[in-house]
Length: 450
Ligand code: PMP
Image 1 (cartoon, rainbow, N blue to C red):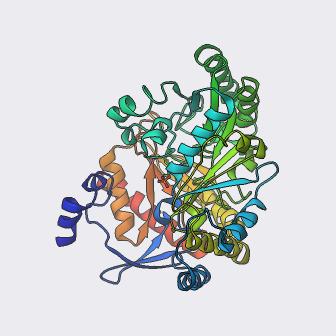
Image 2 (tube, rainbow, N blue to C red):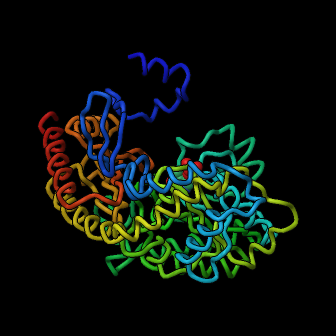
């Protein structure tokens, strides 16, 4: 009670709107894929602090590396040379394909996207930016302009800082958002990358062409896309969409930016970066969240050519790339290698997708199961005929039930109708089974109560 009062009075009370649980969870401690509340109850964490704890809560190797650095040097500005920064830059660059080799550190994904937007405009001399319906690129006034998800977009910010003033031409993307309208049920199954046939692609490419031709004639600075939408509800592009879109955008003089804030660091399983699953190389990649396993860090990685157009002023960020953040992030890369987290994402993710698809076929209210690796969305519907989103009350009931049975998951989608499963990438098949049984039970309970 007392903690909730403090929360409401002193601590970003507005977040309570999206604090999903009727009975909140008071998290006290974490280890790898597990969290404990103040009463000692254990939860399987399948949301990882919004897809952020990449290798595990308090991962022993990352904790040890952090402790070591904390005893040596906490902070110095990056106008000095210090080993953790340069060691980490070199290491991170080795994970990116040519010519993506120049790194700028920030402290968050929003900051990374702000910077990417600025650099794209400086480089191209153009202003307009295309993002997707359902996208989330950040909560800073500028990044909010890129974000299309209405609940995160303040109308006043549109006027003061984003869509109408500072970036008047942020276009809502051509892509349909959280489901493919052509498919028989509310689903992206028929048009997601893994299913060959794609009726949606041509249609969306036509829309992009039209947007480029009519709305942004020769003025496009950048095209921003999450390789798989995160907050938007694990939405995938139609097959070949991104490849064709990159070509069209580049022909118009724009640069292509992959927002890897959620999809990076092996989360999609098959590749280290989400964009690699689309057979494209962006001109700029933004990242945060999983980069530091929960420690604040973000980055923009771009090409030497684009970096060269960013030399007129001085770009300075006090904390970006601070020694502790670099030591943490470096040990995260080591843990990813040593623990084989990308392989875990692939194996456990594929297993979850397969088993969740069975629940989709079993329950009328499970409209779609989609995603890749450990970036999974389960879209809930009233029924498969109407394809209407399941009500917020219905979503909350199931959500609360799952939590009470000991698993934490996330929510997303344009209507908050998609459950999100984006756990620390150290979960096991047994954890997956634990969750599947609980999810099945909660769906059964919901149907029984109806
Ligand atoms: N891009 C994406 C794809 C995200 O999911 C988020 C955060 N949910 C951001 C950017 C913004 O990151 P941050 O909250 O660290 O500013």
